[in-house]
Length: 260
Image 1: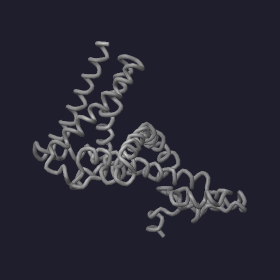
Image 2 (image 1 turned 30 degrees about the vertical axis):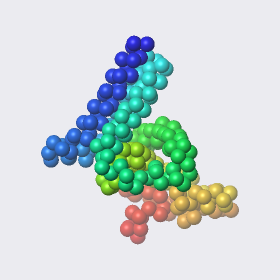
Image 3 (image 1 turned 30 degrees about the horizontal axis):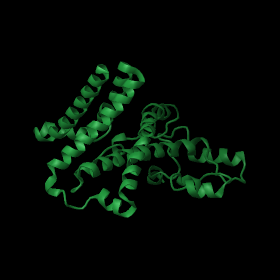
Image 4 (image 1 turned 180 degrees about the horizontal axis):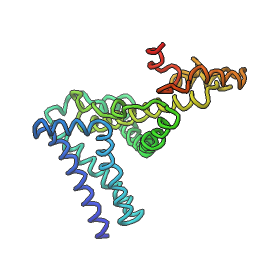
């Protein structure tokens, strides 16, 4: 028990210290501001979130197995609440101003709103899996078949901390959404290239086509109709991709329009 308690207190201390470090960075001059800004964009944001999310659970599991993993998650939640409380206390002069969670609690109920918010945290492993896929699975495709490369920092970043009025509880969840939408959008963009390159055929379900075309525009603007033939598919691929093509993006990508 003493080992688990030591693990818990150590992890909480390291996590809170890390948060304090990030808060102090912009206050130590130009270099500090530059480093702080670097941590807001990939790959800096990746390293920061690895420190706060993945390192604790890895340390916990390695040191004490599944019990240690549970202690690590508890330590992360404790550090998170310490930060929320501390941030709101340092902004207590704004305590009575409008708040997102307060307004939504009026709409759907207090406990319903807060429980729903915390349930979304269960999706964190999924977004990490998507991010790892972007880092490990997609890059070889840019070399092997010349799918377009992307600047991850244009997608995976956080900036809502600059929005005036976001404090504590509101801020941390807005930063979570900030991160996850960028990760998901980059993954979707990469998948557009994969789908149009290997499988440019419409689905037999028109409802599925309708539902998917928002994220995969080529469904309605290029993919071969279900009544077509394999020759239609190969002819389409021949018209969209060439041997000397520098970047083989999905059909509706703006880079194709610029070259037409």
